[in-house]
Image 1 (cartoon, rainbow, N blue to C red):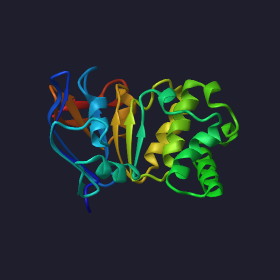
Image 2: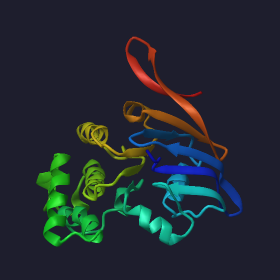
Image 3: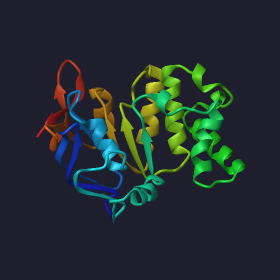
Length: 233
């Protein structure tokens, strides 16, 4: 099967400095890849480069088997990718929850009734159906995070890009988030400082540092209890 995301030797410059400098990865079908690294390493920049929001100075980006070099190339591929921003308030812009979640399907050409049905189904999947008529600005941080995810799931993406998905998420909403991501059949890339969450979800991990990606391992350590960690290979 074709790898949905492949980047090779990607360089992204900002103010003359290489934020990414030779970054290479291949995301296979159904993989859940964690990208970890310190603040400022370029993890968000990497996700943005994957969808053409940070054009590479050099290197190659291929999405769903097609090279992406122009905005038109990336625009076509974005229809198949859901991108969860780091700040939920940057992603929510419609007055009500149901309107916000239905926006994506409408934008993809679904009739209003079908878009609303897809939105309601996505909310129900996350146990958020009761929030459909709420104002988005009155939601808690965790509710906003899950509503943003519902908006992505309503579009039935093949790939999810998740930037700090547990930001502002409490225990109950965190469990809903875990279950939804574990039930997602497509591929995903998770960027997070929440080691426990990432290790629970990821099937593979990479460390980003000095502009490059290196393989890492997800495994357990025996303590008085057992919990999973990510370590560079």
